[in-house]
Amino acid sequence: QVQLVESGGGLVQPGGSLRLSCAASGSMFGIYSMGWYRQAPGKTRELVAAVTNGGSTNYADSVKGRFTLSRDNAKNTLYLQMNSLRPEDTAVYYCNAQTTISYNYWGQGTQVTVSS
Image (cartoon, rainbow, N blue to C red):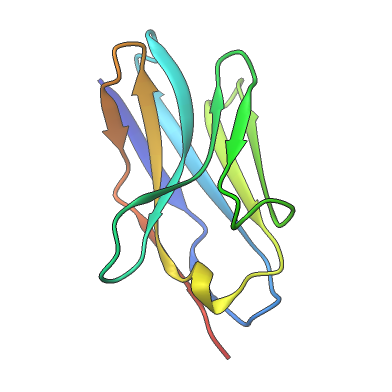
């Protein structure tokens, strides 16, 4: 079992920045990738960014150049640095860990609101 705990969400003005953190605990054996997804009201959950154990990263087109994924393996922590935030980035952000057999673990989510 893997537990994921997100932090760092909040209210920010357009153009501002936030950094999300995801602390993972439990057995990380078999985890293939970790990443962030988001879900806005009335919309389906979508991939924001993910990184594989091999270091390959994938970003949604809408966040390329603005968001940066990083990880601290010693702390089992994943970060998402979000810059130049836009109102359309408003959503609940979920940390995800996916196993080699495509089983998904999810965190509880953290709200990000971009508004003036």
